[in-house]
Length: 54
Image (cartoon, rainbow, N blue to C red; front, side, top):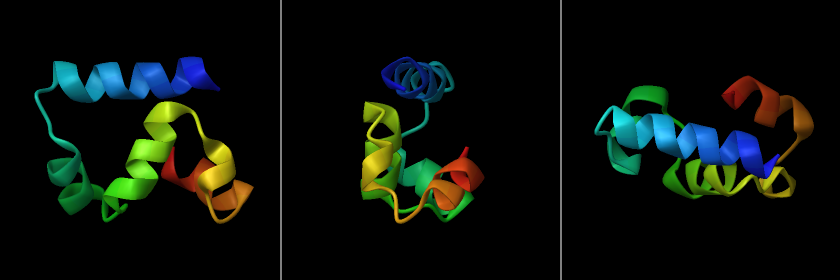
């Protein structure tokens, strides 16, 4: 899952977006976005929510 997180971060950075900008657009809070980018899916409230965020 770390690979997926790395790819998410790289794509965000390629688009020139900050985590705060992504938060405003997606309504996913920065701590959750950071966890997704780390590949830390255990930090999500549930597997269903993690899949929904992706």
